Image (cartoon, rainbow, N blue to C red; front, side, top):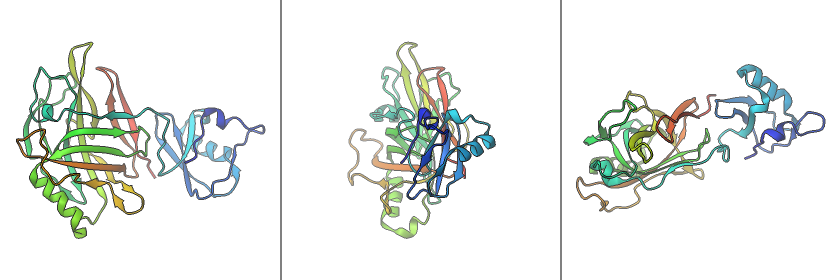
Length: 279
């Protein structure tokens, strides 16, 4: 990946920034925190100003607020990681008011056209001021979530599912005819507790917490062929013994559309972060 900061865009003596991309076919200009603007590149040494100007005119952005990266590569370093490394599995299955650890749900999931059952029912959530439901049905209970915040960075989930959903994933992993497309739709919510205000709040929402929308994604890969969907263990998770549940690991990349993920680092401190590049 090649990435330029603000000073790099204006640092050349003659006003032109020259580069020698070896295999770039497309690059994107990213307005900080806004939507990416793709434009073509000839793949030979050339001045960047004309392409920047064209992208800026089309989008109405200033070139001074742009950064450049290869489409398909993470825009790492633009923003800090967003990660919930130890979400409280027991709190997800059985909410208790005296427990103040973050927890979350996968509220909908489909992989390769197969819709997974939201068969963990009547799950209670904390009372928040975000107009979120107080009761959920969930496909899975989250163990962890990670996103490096770049608009093409993957979302990585670890979560627990029922025996029925575990068997569906098992069949996909062992029977290629059941995994005919990499397309994934997913929605999730994460709740956190603010110690200063002594209140729960909706910390993250991918898709929607209140509407029937979901993130449009595709299975991420390690290398060219290894899909990042797995059942880490054949054994039932023992943290919560009832209902029976199994671990799942899933990483997804955005489809080629512009989407948004809601992140709230404290009550009332909400940001809508872009995810995906429209082409």
